[in-house]
Image (tube, rainbow, N blue to C red; front, side, top):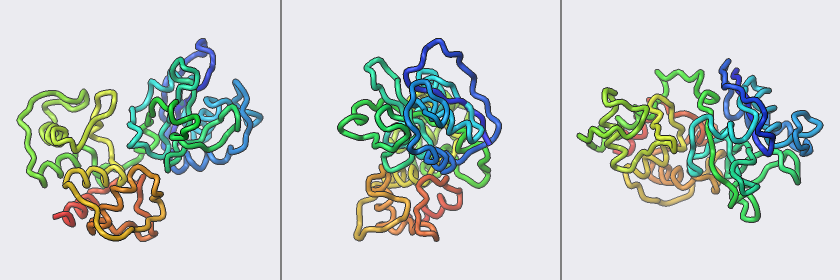
Length: 293
């Protein structure tokens, strides 16, 4: 299991910051499940116990239950992890809001289907939509992913990294790039994947994070791969609607997954799910590409 510290809301700026430390791993579903155990706990400014949580106290408790420590205030919490675009949110990501007009002031945990769980002043620990037109929708300001939560124990000899997927796509589509521009601060010109990453970036198939990284060694989810494949091969919608137990029609990847299924590129998993948040194995990636050909 992991260790990190979390912190958010309107806590005093004088609180001492704590550096992130790692001691293990926790899966996204573990985070989601643990967060739900506190549903109904009332809101309490400065609260860090089941007698009452403020938003940061709640998030901190969930992660500490899983032996994960992260900073205790919103602004410092917002400085850690990897920036994630709203369209690429995954279960376990931290979502941030500006509820005061003065910057980051609220945090929650994304649980899928455009929903997040947090300790809100009016309802205590509860679930809400990040797109709620009456409140949260226009207050959303960003998200962060603490990568270790998902990938610390991943065997990358089995799973496809972002760089490997970039290379496979560049090879399959016969994309090339002689551009020597350093586009990402974590992809050096000496990398074996440098030109492939530049090529898929130029083709607008892949993009980096808001902090200028590509994260070449990180695994990639099946949800993200669905989007990448549809856009890379310009796949069009086909006939029929395919039901996957874990793909809600409101999920950002729903349309991409449907297009893959309609084109016979995916049939889902034996349990009836697509596996939105599962990492893509090298074998699965190769199968997708074979079916596209």
